[in-house]
Length: 97
Image (cartoon, rainbow, N blue to C red; front, side, top):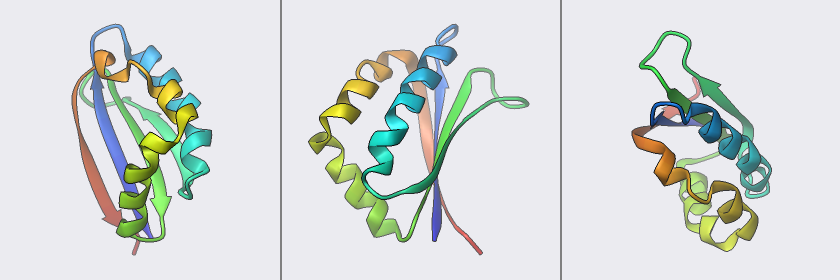
C-alpha cells in the first residue's frame, strides 16, 4: 500500500479556490480506485501550500489513475482552471510500513 501526496503552491489569495476544486474532485478520483483521499492545508509550512493525499494498492494503480484522468469528464470539470491557481508543486510517493 502506498500514500501519494500531491503538494501544490497556490498563488496568493487562491488557496481556498484550489481547496474547493480538490474537494470537488475527490468523488471522481475515488471512482478510479484510490482510498482515504483528503485535502490538507498548511498550518506550519510555506504559505498557501495545499496537498491532496490518497492511498493506492500499488504504484502501478496510481499511474493507471493518471492515465484515466482524461476519461473522466466529471474530474475534468472539477479541476478545470486549477493550473491558473498554482505556481508549482511536487509529488511524493510513500510506501506504508
